[in-house]
Length: 192
Image (cartoon, rainbow, N blue to C red):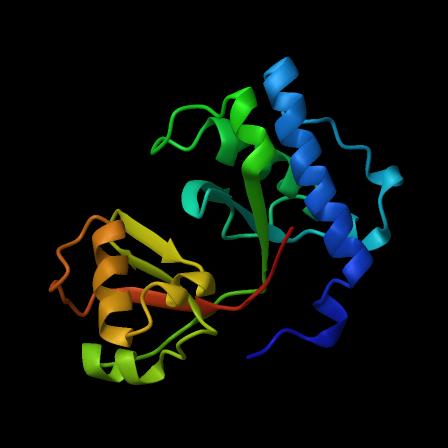
């Protein structure tokens, strides 16, 4: 289920989004809100409804990650809002401070559409997962969690990946039921 080539962003578009993300964080430091986005200032691809995550790292450590799993707004707006939210509203971290900006690394992951997986057992699900490629959304009842494909870098084993995803969703790592639903998606990820 790779993304269609027409959905991939070129080098210039990726650079534009990374610049926008940094500008939105800088705007947030000075004004307390995301940078306003005028879609007429951006290429047409930035105005398409697309979902994105913005991940921040500082000195190699995670510093924030916020995004949307569904396309709810134009890509440029999604990136600007998620960059601001990753810097100032990720509940796992205090708001970003001005001294942190100079060594902040920004990564953007633009999501493709998600597809539900059909499986009868945890083993069957594990055999369907493609390490390094698949992002997963796991849901059961009110519990929900996602891991971007970049998480495979730190959790390369399928079983470990799934156990940690269950924990992120608020479930026990060894939890299993036939009510678990999983959707798979792919991303185009790029960083500064």
